Length: 299
Image (cartoon, rainbow, N blue to C red):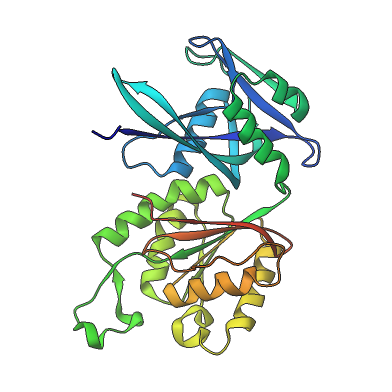
């Protein structure tokens, strides 16, 4: 019989200078150890949201998601049974708040990287911290979202993008995207001038009062033959924005990923396709991509 899997997520929360940051360590009285903040995922919760929630709950500070760091795996006992725990970690910039002690965490300390490595009780946490030490931290996020599933009254062979709206599943994916966009600190919404793409960003726009900017060149017809020009415009928009999200169809999103990563310091992904409602998260500085990660849709 295979062991059950427990999913968890957390982060290396940091503050002050990105080149010489202080990171947050928490003390757990139940285990009498010093660790990085993390916790179990709720049913159906996207791990990015789990990471944000758990770091905030354990430290009292407000985190902003940065580049993905690593995933660690180790055996545990869950409900009296042997299980495998899988915990994913992200870099997180502290944007405010203050520590609040709880039953799970009774103390927190901000420490330089070398002191933090010596204080951590777990060797796996030191692996995560080492990954944090290797990444570029002075980046901003650029999210490239593929719209969710659509519905159309027309036969499949006659369906046109401009006639399609999100179906119930697509609308659910759009609603679940809201906490992800909030955690990334999205400040600008850019969409293909198509109903399904605008619908994908509409729940977050309604929550924040932002306006979804529509762009004809992000439609399949507008993008074809203009890939490099459109990618340059997106790169420029991202450079001028604190955190930009772009929504389009499969061909546009995969084309943008390839064009934006091309010429950067990272190797391009071997596969750029993404599921409906999923996204690529690119981390860049002035449009130059230094890290990227692909995510399935939020449930």
